Image 1 (spheres, one colour):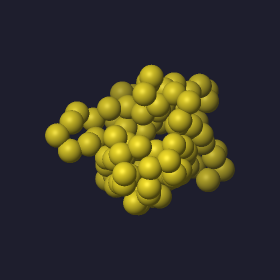
Image 2 (image 1 turned 30 degrees about the vertical axis):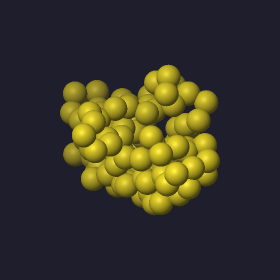
Image 3 (image 1 turned 180 degrees about the vertical axis):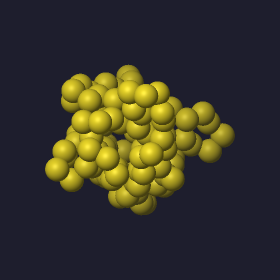
Image 4 (image 1 turned 90 degrees about the horizontal axis):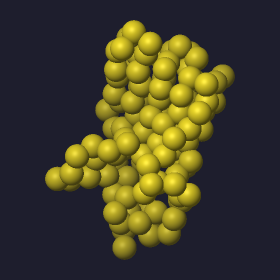
Length: 116
C-alpha cells in the first residue's frame, strides 16, 4: 500500500507560478512511476508530468516548458512546479504512483484555480 498526499494548491492569477508537492509513504526507489494528473470539470483526467524510478521525466506537449516535475528522495516527495499559469490550468491535481507489482495509487487531489 502507498499513501499519497498532495499539497500546495490554491488560487493564483494568470501568469503566476505554483508548486505542488506529493508526499509518499514509501521510498521513491520502490515505486515504478510517480506522476501528476489533473482533471478539470467536465473533462477527463490527463497526465501533466511523470518521473520514473530512474529519474527520467516525461511531459505531454501542453506541459512542456511550463511544468517541471522533480523529486526529493530523502523527503519522499515529488513536486510539480508550474509556471506561467493560465485559466485553462484550473483543475484538481492528483498525485499517482504505481509499483512493479502492477498496483496503482492515487492521492485525494488538490485544487488549483487560476483567475483571469
